[in-house]
Length: 277
Image (cartoon, rainbow, N blue to C red; front, side):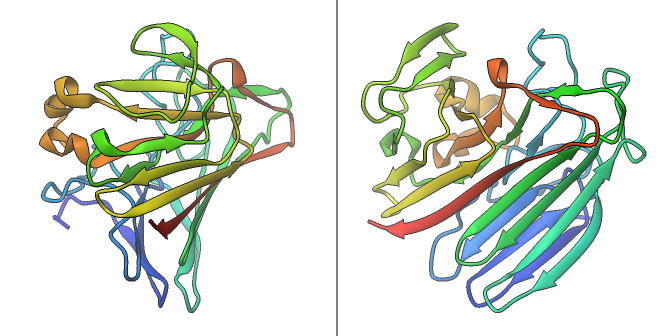
């Protein structure tokens, strides 16, 4: 880590090693013992403060991209730039748990006039579970888009297949059309799709000889993204590493926004496990 790197909270146990950053509550690393790392980050570029990286599991909130009206900035919301507070950290035999918090008193936006409380809990061991909870402490309901934007490390994105989405309707953001998935998804060039499904998804990776399994609760959508060979090299912290990840995200976006009533808490959870082929 460099002098301007965000402060971090490492996790280590018999089942894994991992790391959560204060900045953005970014789950940067999860490395099960005896396996290749599961979360992608550029192998040579450091994570620097003030620059949300294309790595780990960023938090997108309270809008996704530029929002439904395409008029919000920064992209994916400000909380992935904000400095979250460590609420609790504990260790166990397999790894440990890191709990981070952020409120409207800590960080806000002129484009977001509501009070809020966020909590992110990362439980690391032989499996990874990340939960994002949104609480509305105000007197009026508010509407959010949200995503846990997981960058999954793969041997070669052109050779993986994403299963569990057959027959699911999706919005193709590259082509700007709605379609229905036929069979497994094989990524061919730039891919940016929002699938309206909460079913388990698998990423089968013949290069690394493993299958990643993603299960969620509280998430109506699956987002699958890779910039491909035309856009990937132009992203500074991706560059020529674009073939080595695929984003498979838990999300509530587009038509599946979440309304959080006064005093209500809504939670979205992402679970990730690994099995050998």
